[in-house]
Image (cartoon, rainbow, N blue to C red):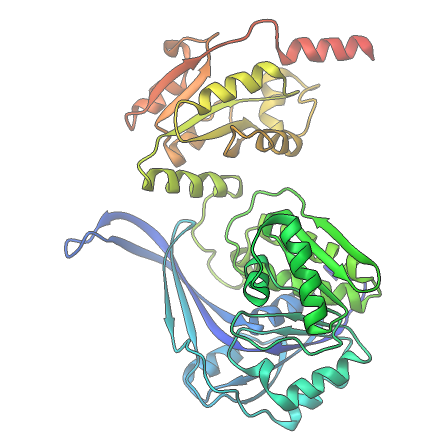
Length: 462
């Protein structure tokens, strides 16, 4: 089992869609209009909405029943085919299957096309749908605002289930309120603002919103998720707890909330308390994003989507946003083993040269090759985390080679900045930057501060 300690029986209740990811490359504009032409490399399809939650849990090794409504069209048949390891108990939706198509270039979302994604009437549910909740260990309600979670008979069945087993409710802005008595509801910050009308941000806002929703919904606990910061849990019995998220390099956020809700349900069914379960959910969502998100989840099901290496995702997104706004992209590089004041000053000076700073960081293997078998002193994961903690650093790209030339070619900075103990002509990156017209600039060097001296001093103290 990849998550949890045993094989569990889990029912997922909610709206199911067909998700399509079209991914490719773009190197030219259309002659008909100033829009990019996408050369399609992959066309990946999967069950979305509650279907994605069911898929995640089935991949984890659990026995999963999806309680939903489906159309009688060809796309609904495709959804069933995409769920071979899930028991589907479906009533009639009465409307065409909704389809969401995302078009991506490398890891950048270009456009999303929605078909049939309006809000339909609350569907009629069947006795079989309600009965499917009778013999399971946990229930996840994945409400995508299309009426399944609002169906009266199904809500009654969920309420009965909540009396004897954990029910996790992932709400939707256009969906129904959670059934009273469930174990935990998991709105994100934007949803919590919509539900409460409260303003603010961060943990103070999440605390106020979670307490308000706890009283309004009459549920056992509310966990307001805060993206890469973590979640704030308000529990009527034990009070409020903040659950921080691990620091990861994240890419496509699609499905992160589903991953969290599914993992919370598994942890509760395995005997965890609410705070422990939300901690497990936050960790699982972070790991899911760090692994590549929904693309990695389906990597074994067909050709992998076109994407850049994981460490580049934040850099590529930031670089694209800065360039779109007409800004200047700056990069610098080094080992940054034992980060010291000289590093901080050099990085701050480099950031002042433009509108974002990407640090190209030597991997552990690269540092060993350059500095010897006793280096680095700190792992690349720790070095990445420390660099990102500096306000002047916007993203970090890790590279394995002696020089960062290949990494630089992936995002093509406008400026390459190095400490003034070098001259531009000495730097191998000068020729690389010249390939696209980039410039090499030196920034102030601060003598007397070096990692080598600090390492020697530490060794002497030891």
